Length: 117
Length: 111
Image (cartoon, rainbow over all chains, first blue to last red; front, side, top):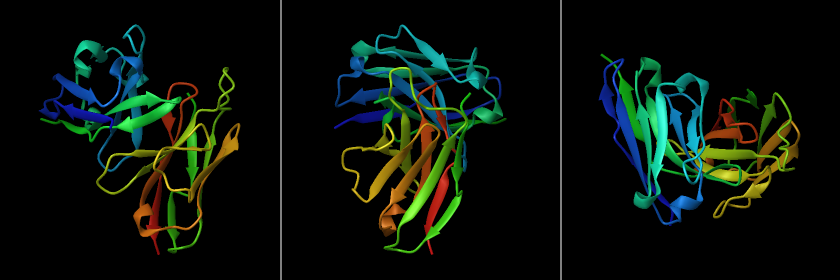
């Protein structure tokens, strides 16, 4: 069974940093693109970033370019999102998602990031 | 960027009756590889999203066959043949042809 477990969320001040982690199990992690998707409180879904199987390609939504960095460690079956220069509008639940069939196949339970002073 | 527009945004339905959600894209979702990467997701209250449909009309494993997807180009539809109580939630379409963008979501509730 595919399992994706996020961690690292919490309360951070504007301008601060946070690193999210996602532990993957139940599938061959190194064979899949992976994504981060976020959902602001009471709002819709927004794709944030994704990374190729071997980490050689990374893509970001415009609103986080230059501030967020996606990475992975295939030896540890883990996905990461380094978030710097955080803003109030980055407040959201962040989901770790396995890319599949040109879409987003399996989702974690999410971790809440709150940016507030 | 491709903009995805869903309608309606709110859909009150009667148990046992059919329901339909429309999703339109601002440009064709046909990829250069010939596939059309249009997904549908269900998000029940308090839960993570769950994919129902991929590549327009393919049901994910474990998805009841009362859910079906159709469409082509820029116009797509999710249909529920007979709504059940467990179908309450928000439904999103998403295109994966050029990056990934979601529709605004359609809230399905029981009348």
